[in-house]
Image 1: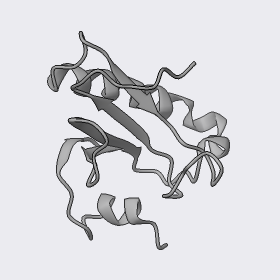
Image 2: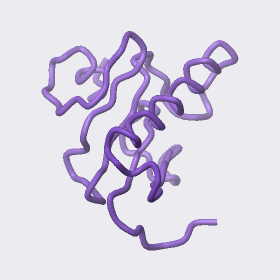
Image 3: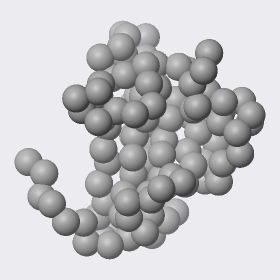
Length: 113
């Protein structure tokens, strides 16, 4: 498989890891869009949000718990942060492995409703 995130999971490509367990990996984005920009991914390869299966529900829920934990550790839980998931080419997804962008550390512009 030629997935950059799978290579990061397998430690074939170095990353600045902020969280890791048996199911989830989180690392600092190499092109941050905010002072704090962390990418959170499942270790299981899921191409995009529309490919989540019933058996993935607990994993996706756990990812949100990990995001909350990381936000607290990074000191942005109280001030606020943004979580973004892009889906497919028109949605801006560049890496075909579901991933969650955790952005914070500043007042983010662009209200998204």
